[in-house]
Length: 158
Image (cartoon, rainbow, N blue to C red; front, side):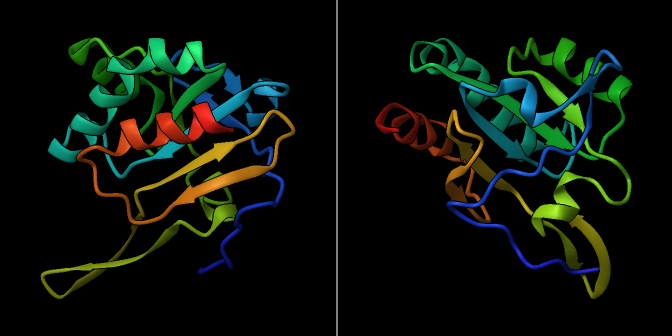
């Protein structure tokens, strides 16, 4: 199911996610702080690992900019915990629901195609959410190289 995308200025949907520890987590838990929510396709794949390492490396800078980080994919919490431990990731990870989750609401769980095969998958997308819960900036179809640094600059400017 393709949903219209929610863009800049809209309220970020407050749909429950599951943290790597199995606890419920919501965007609303970060109210009053800036938040970067980066959606990626799959734990422990080359591009996704690089993206998570880049955000983790810059986590102290994001903290100084008053900005929390949250990485989201459809992988289960136990897989997130293993991925985070394996790569010493510090940016928290959350699991999105199989159906009707945050990525569905945002329109980034979408039909993809590879080698002539069509399947549903996560479009690598990053959202910068202001302390008011509204989307301040969106990066669609993210290219990993240099992305975390670009998001950090936008967070500092917000």
